[in-house]
Length: 473
Image 1: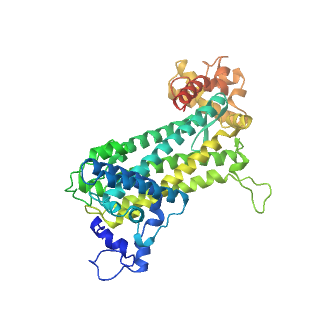
Image 2: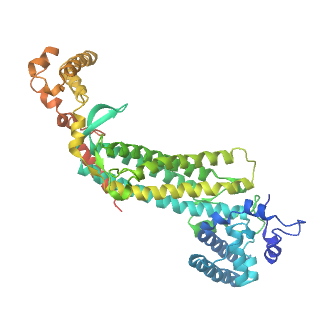
């Protein structure tokens, strides 16, 4: 259904029972009103709608389409409208369908004909596209800052535990020893990429559709670049058909949001595992956990569990938006009203989740002894023994086979590689000397990996301090 233009507004506002102009022979039914209305959820864009309208009015006055007196009246009226909205006294009406017409009707009530002139040179099609971009730009800025805060907390945790040894896993089997600091910095890298993606997405969000009108532009002598500068946009959308119908920027944001939540979910899974008494690597503050209605001993990690679940919700919004757009012809279609609820919820979900995780990560209590004990299981330094033999001139595949025999012997004896005497080790390979014990210790293993990206405590400190400096507010 084509959205109405400013010429229809007077009749529409004069008679709520007739939702459109005299073009229609009967009013819209109450069920259809409820089905098609968006005001219940798009009213959250009221502030940016007013912001866009004020920039539009300023431009119309500057190019002589409306008078300076009308512009001043519009500005004064919008101040009152915004105050009413913020105070909760504004009367939202489903008869007026959306945030735009609700605000415009109230403006006309306040200032009369000047309010009716505001919609000159624009359509709700380009108006809503502008509102979404203005709103989403703000949400992206908030999210990027929350990611910065989370990375800062992770860096602080890493610096504190640069020497805390834990098992590194592949296939959830003990693989090699790493430091806990190095482990949490891996998540700082993930969230750093998330911030980069959102910053890049923001560039495409920050283009102005206003001035495209319904789909073909307008015959009024508007100055789109002026409006773009006023609203802080980097530029204007270059094609009117694309300007009103494009939702790529929303899809791109939801894709970035889904990846944020995937990374949150991976961290959540580890927090849940680590907090299990069977593992016992960490403890979370009580405010992030709940108890059981029947088992008094329970302390359940509800926040990471729920975050893990909410990941599916955000992923779903991405798929919904992709599906929404896949079959739409140019230009605007009513389908696009369905873009907002999923987008709003995705933004709300990552904002709330990141806010909580900033607090929660900062309060993680690490049980270093349990981590170290776990690292002593599963022959975590076996690769170090193989590397030692390679450095002595043994081909890696031969060294690999030698160490496999040594591990099997230790399994039979119920001991670790470091527990074998020097003669026992030399029985597996004569090149082994007394310096092997510095290699087979957990501390020796992690310390040897001091290259960029390695798990050595000195490298963890360098990376954590770099990240702390980078994320300083």
